[in-house]
Length: 337
Image (cartoon, rainbow, N blue to C red):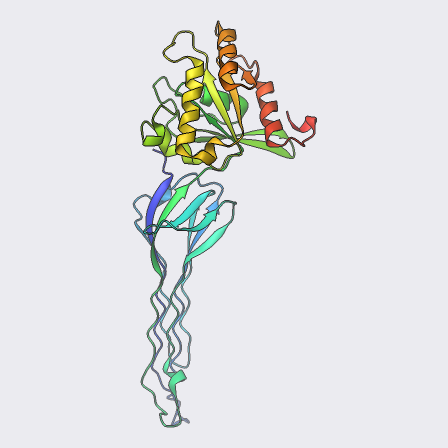
């Protein structure tokens, strides 16, 4: 199961207590207070890591707690500070307060980090409380507790182009043909159960990242099927590629209706998502009768439709070129494919 959401409690470390101590040297019979300060508690820090692809490491870890600072000692010795607890999360993680759902930090770049819970300050030792009228103070501060908060972590994949369409539309096969991705493809209704990323290198200095979203069905925006869980992953994409399958065997839904249904689902989920730039592609054009499906889809979408076959490779260069042009119209032609 793809873990793209997690609820955790983070608790920073408590500060160490200040010490009550006095000088006891042989030649200092009236030695004053010498209690040192306590050390600072550890912070909890979230770090976006490129090699982390879900919240698998957080399974079973309901509370993420940093260590406490060491107490102060005699001879004005300062207690040691605790180490920070560093938690690695996927790039694209939204960090929200679990109760209010307020966005605290959006970790959209690799290496980005946020101190989400500050460790408690160490208490002061009795050396700080000496006064002319109180030469031997027997008081010290306790360490402060660390910040504790409940978090909701949500992963939204970051990709240039998102592939959307019905189950068995050929998105996973297309992604595997275009990129280094090798998604698991099966013969059941939801052939992809997890979102996948694939990278296409256009040149040494330019690449395109594709996101393959599990197949949508009618009513996905209401929670039907799997699509509602993963629609959030294309909110960050710059371009939506609608993949509609030509299937002469399964004629339960004409291509025009399939395209219209997916467009409606995107619109009902988010008006902003529906307004993103999009391309339309007809898959499985190695099967007979694809020309009729192509004409029907052109009439419904009222735009260019790229016909391709991921099996034979026909049309893949054209599709990739259109994606590159849509993402960067100013790029030189040699950088597009």
